Image (cartoon, rainbow, N blue to C red; front, side, top):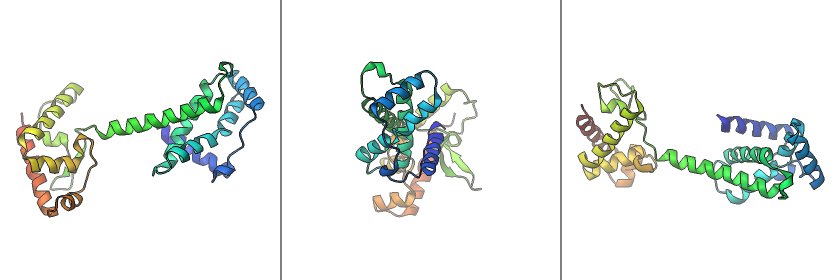
Length: 227
């Protein structure tokens, strides 16, 4: 939610200011102006705080263009970097003697790095609520449906136990080919998810054969995980 709001704020701000290229960013403040703004901001002057953020936006753009020029989601990175810039403005103290540009750049970099770490962590998680197939009526089936437990699994402890059991069954109950197909199909272990067609192309087999293997593997898991 916070990222979405800052993304919207950043883009609206750019439109209002006519910012499309680094040359159109508001110029940096002089040392004297910057010091004065920080002193006013420390006393609760919101206009001074906004001025510091606005006149340092070019620092965010510079870091994204310099270190993440090949990233596909540069607009998101600018928004994330802007969060780091705001944190830098709110925590910087002129009495420390450091230059704000140096401090701000570190805060911006840290915010972007935390974003990448969070993305990597999420990509390795397996949710029992993840959709893995559809039933005869076209309704989505999740890992929870495959488990087919009649017990109350609302508690987080039970969810964890069942998920771990399912992962063990994938290792012990499936053939190497079935495990390979499920791993590729649902991104188990943090790898990128693939469609049946992509798996077929990668393994040199037909898509219908991939579909049969996937359904057989899911049936085995369903049987193995029945209470």
